[in-house]
Length: 268
Length: 108
Image (cartoon, rainbow over all chains, first blue to last red; front, side, top):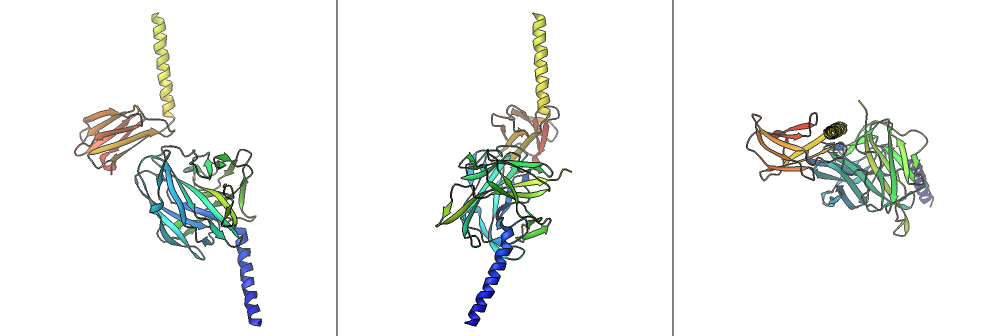
């Protein structure tokens, strides 16, 4: 009996420590990553799909099974789900289920990639999280619709070209749910602190760490508009929490989030 | 009457030059692909998203002789029979706006 209590006490302490450690790391981000988003030549572009705490180079989660993966090019949808292959991402302190894909790109223009995983159960919050994620490629410098919505149930529509934001400038977008602007929504913003090593499936060099004060947040205005100054070159993610129309999954609360990634460069 | 026509021509010239000024504020873009069936497809455009429809396309051989000439269609595309050997494709959007693409850079 005493032993049992001790075990529970230890378990409780571990759980508490874990919960505490996770609490500031609330920002889950579905990553749809490729190192070079501006292409000059046709070819196969490698992507990594990782569910992670990217700002702190932290814990990676076993992401939900892919539900949908495609790109939109000049208004036309191309399915990419059959390109996905499971991988193991070796994060700084744990390993997680992730995916990779080789995406063939030929013609000039904007490629808007969209990935929807099945909802992920977040034990510490007892909720499901589903992050509908957009990421962009451009080939040949030709703009062909990066600023258009692509009909996702919730999405951030960029107002600055997401493939070449200048560090020190701003990024603005409009948050939509079922095509309508979402007012007063919380948007968490994270920097990809360690860009993944594309062959080793590990975090690469760590170039930043989160500052004190918790998540970086912007709130959308009455028209669903938000803006954020981009202080540093690299990959920046925006996650609108619970902006999607679906609010429940398997009897539990669902946070259906809209995520968008942009690439920022230094002006040299 | 003559003066009127002269003015109209001048105005037309002014319009043309102002149009080309607008064009100089953006960058011409052109890429070509070997279709693998003996034809080559080029697509053009400008960095501000404007169409390259009507832009002249020239294909030259090794010695700089014009092999064929054409224009970008309404979709800013131009397809042609691939010449034998060395060739160069020129996207001719006017002075400062032409792009030369070597056959070595045109792959499937």
